[in-house]
Length: 474
Image (cartoon, rainbow, N blue to C red; front, side, top):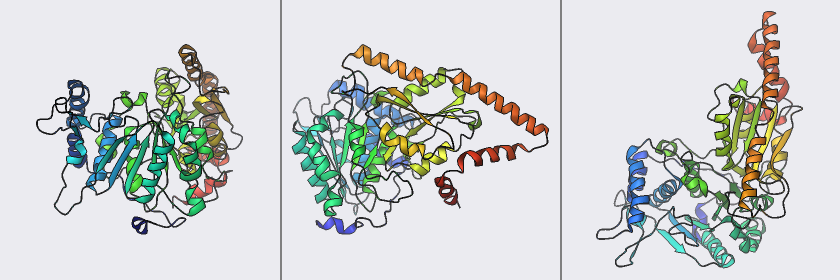
């Protein structure tokens, strides 16, 4: 075992994590340095116009929303400043598949390559700076992923990342996933902290450029179906929806006293979506990755009758439709950002806020036999109140990941997002009837708090996890 592992916890020992937030002044400086070329270095004019200047402008505004590439650069730069090394490999990762990263710049006169984050300079003379290694690898996924697995095993204090051009391309390295990444610790006690960024999302790319096969990765997880069994997961699978969440995920990976592989369903269309941004304050001290995100637009949880549970970019389409729906206040959209280990306690706390909700729906853009539904559904059902069911809204079973006809894919997307809001009028009518009944009870001098408390207790206390979650608050 290489010497670095002696500084980490052994398998199955008690896990600890350090904070992942960073001072905003530090982040600002890193952000500026991430797009500062060397002197007498001629940058391509389009990179200056569409990459460097927009990032500097957003950073100077402070409260402005930062995109995913900026959050990633801040995560890399902050780790380098703390002495960690970062290695990023994959097809065209220097530029980024979607021309979003530009971690390395090429002089238009001399063709010299320059990596800005390697020239930040240490905060003090005693501080060792880490190194960012950007490797544009070839298209042999099995060999490259196998090599990066070896890097993560050799040096646990190097954040080793492999990014697929599209998430679908990982399938050529499936044997490395199955035989080493997901099962190496169980077979040999060998931890690894490899990060796999697999761009995922149905946005017209066709059946070979849309899915990182979330269902396959979740099948490799040892997350127990019974939430009462406490076990360290063999892998982490996340589908983050904000740049800040992505920032904390990357930093968390090396700020722990143990190592686990992390599979990220990485963004494509979200890279430049105006609503999918984060501020520096969301990455500041005291902030961290949150496995579950509640609906930020819910004003009165008691008015919510339908709770939609979603993972990934589909949230933004549903949130837009909710804002346009006159009955949108009766819907809450809850995001599951980390699929394994499944965040039972965090999700339960969020769901239990909606005491009057009677309709719980899992919404996904993947076919029913794909995506996270088969993995998440039984775990969510164990958290729901008595007599509640979890409905499915999404595409039906399909042999391929999605249709190869763009118009058909768009029609299916419109159908499933519309279906997610069907039947709201009837649910709201039920809420009105319930309110009338409560008013009549109040007229009989029964305190409102007593009615609500009795209702919540009756609906939620049937689950064993309820008692566990309640006891954890004291």
